[in-house]
Image: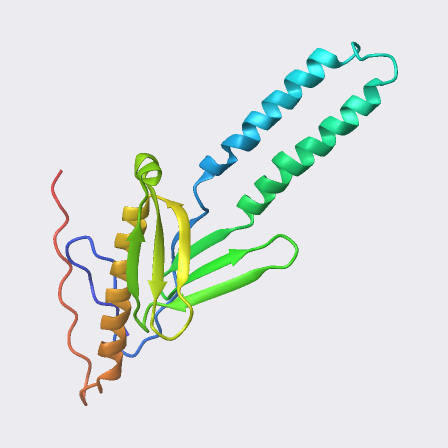
Length: 194
């Protein structure tokens, strides 16, 4: 089977009845601005260690200072970073997935073909950073919240496009194929002169 050509920069669509491959559209994490406090803590701990190392009062030793600094950095810098890095949203041509957790991974997904409503919430601080929270609700499952994501408007547009394309392809594939040979493939559009 040949694949239809595309016009206007749209991606190629598979022939009717052919399986549609699942392609990655976007993969992102929540906005990283919440790690700003962790960065300030790291800078403060480095400054305090540099100032007090070798200048501690009599009952304290340098190893105590370094141990306390290591505990503070582990609790207030490393763990928040790992929690942020382990929370990933993935949009493919078939579904939206959320994966979170370092040791015990929780995963949720929502198929585009089932359709869902999109609700975008952008607080004033989120607007300043270009972020927002998108809630996907299909009316059956619990809503899927894409919380505090960067470029919320762009993600919203991508999700709307994916739902539309998935439903068009599902409707097209649900129609019976006409008997006889497949229709001829239209000629490719000319390349732009440039």
